[in-house]
Image 1 (cartoon, rainbow, N blue to C red):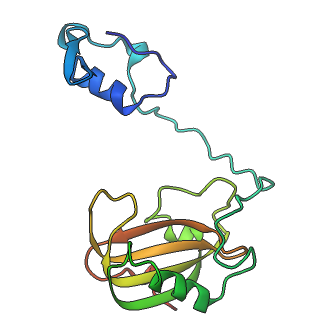
Image 2 (spheres, one colour):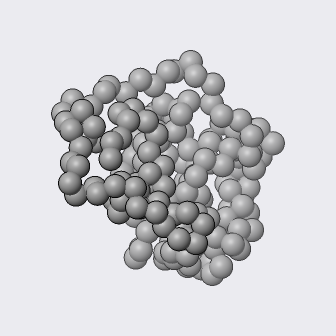
Amino acid sequence: MTATVGAVVTAAAVAVSLCGCASVGSGSAVIGDVASTPPSAAESFETPTDPPESTIDPNAAKPTGGSISGGMPPTSAQVEDWVRESPGEFPQLDRIFVTTVSLDTISGFTSGTPYGYAPTDLVILGTGVGTFVPQFGQGSTYTWGTLMFDATNGRVMGSFAGPGDPPWVVMPG
């Protein structure tokens, strides 16, 4: 079994490469003996020793749409209302905190700088404490969750969450 270097690996491809079978309707079909055909060095998916440098284009347009404030900078009240009115994500809500930080301040909680943004760009964080169920968390629950908004146009950018008490970075200064 071989893999194409540079190809997009899907969940189905991972399942095939790990078990040597593919789902076909309600059954499965054997594709090959994975154990007897190890990948060559060119086919391995090792992490490069020198990762590429970040190429943030300061002139790239920020994504638009999904604004909670009609494209204007959101107020603390608008962010607090958005958190309060998200019962699917916050089925139990005890407290809400709103604060403004730069993206680099929260880099330990996010998976990188979103496309079109620089690490110094400001975001508004709406943190709810109680029970947080991430939209794509597959049933996971946390004791706090933070919704992230673009501070210039109110665009919903994403969320992050955790167990225990919220970290200092999401608390008002």
